[in-house]
Image 1 (spheres, rainbow, N blue to C red):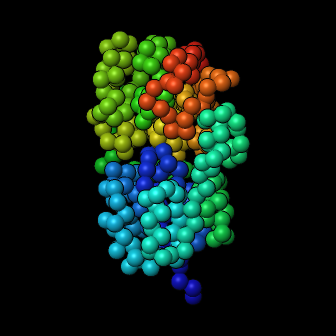
Image 2: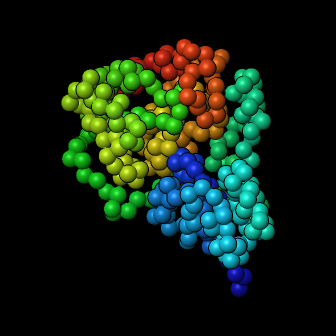
Amino acid sequence: MQKPLKILVVRFSSIGDIVLTSPVVRILKNQLNAEVHFITKKVYKCLIEHNPNIDKIYSIDTDIKEVVSELKNENYDWIIDLHNNIRSSQLKRIRVKSRSYKKLNFQKFLLTNFGINRMPKTHTVDRFLDTISHLGVKNDGKGLDFFLSKKDEVDISVKDYICFAIGGNHFTKILPTTKIIEICKKINKTIVLIGGEDDYNRAEEIENEVGRKVINLCGKYSINQSAHIMKHAKYLITHDTGFMHIAAAFQMKIYSVFGGTHPDLGFTPYLPNPENKIIQVENLSCRPCHRYGKSKCPEGHFNCMNLIDTDLFIE
């Protein structure tokens, strides 16, 4: 009987990208009965530590050197590099066969700098799966996974609420606070704000302005606990962030707001709930300004967010 393959999957960051790798590890486990190991940054280990399709997790602070000797001793059959950057290229010193995800950097450069769209109509997940196609596996069509444990369960003693993930890694991915306040005032339900510690003060401003129907939980719970709270919401309003992809794993209804980034970059909710909405300002020539987002609007007007129609959030 042939020994199962031993495979190391590589993705160091960030929340959404790591969630998008979940079909890869599931398919490697279910279709090949592979022994699947995963390497990521320590801060993101929580996103995958309850995934039954992953047999072992390596985590680093910043440098592959922290674990390279251990990785060499694993005698992997394959390294599947779903990050494909300078850090992940250091894994070549292990001298194992590898395949790397095609990032399409040139196509993204054309789109964000010249408005020339040569991006394939292919989701990032499907490009991740292309990286393992040589192993004879197929997309199982089951979408994303996100696993929680009992310790992640949170009772916020609120019923019939929606979640609003108000944060984002970059300024141009985030609605202005005045816009969020306007949206919240138009929604006739309890609104639970989720996000990190950096979002707390802005959430306080929103809560104070809108009133009692808004509950600020930003910075009060872990990523996984916030995901549990979100999972039990009626639906999620979110920017182009990791919570959007976690919600897609839960097959939630999602209102996804795209500002300086764009769905054509390949990061929309995967296999979406049919009730989902993509909310964006159409036909704005300066979009997308960057594949990740920027610290300020390059044009100075921030029309990609300032011109968002808040009536689109009303059911």
